[in-house]
Image (cartoon, rainbow over all chains, first blue to last red; front, side, top):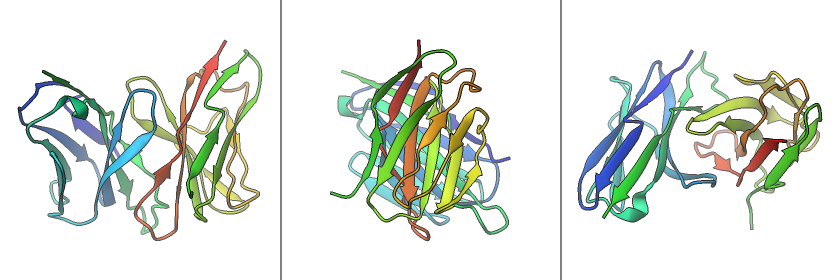
Length: 115
Length: 112
């Protein structure tokens, strides 16, 4: 059974500071996603990481993937209040070559950015 | 505009009732999925469908049923057998071979 674990689960940051959210997964995977969720809202896709060593950046967020370590990171640079949200990583497992695109999610990291 | 539409946005169910959540997509996607989200938790897969007239159980299918009679529609019925149905339900779709999955806006179901 694929397990996806994020840490930390709660993150309180000051504006202007940097921090990293970690996502570990337990088995081989086709691809890894990062999503953002605002309270009461649906998921917003941030990044899709498809290969070992993949790095993607959008604004103050940068995501990377190490498939050998089964680890992805979401790095936040110079945080601003607008980044306050819950961030999820999700993994598509590789099972006999057929994953059907099923996503297994981490627990989510609740990020709060303070002035 | 192409997208996924879930309705209703809010739904209240009495004990012992069955309710059906709607999910419609006009993206011509082959695959559709239903996820459940409980407060402070990640999403868990209920059911998924790769093609019309075929669907598979996910990790928490007990107490739920689905149908896939049309490519664009994948309704979820929460039956009275689901003992704790209060949650946020999200529908998603994806085209076969694509990496990206698209999510609807969700339905918040509350048992009263």
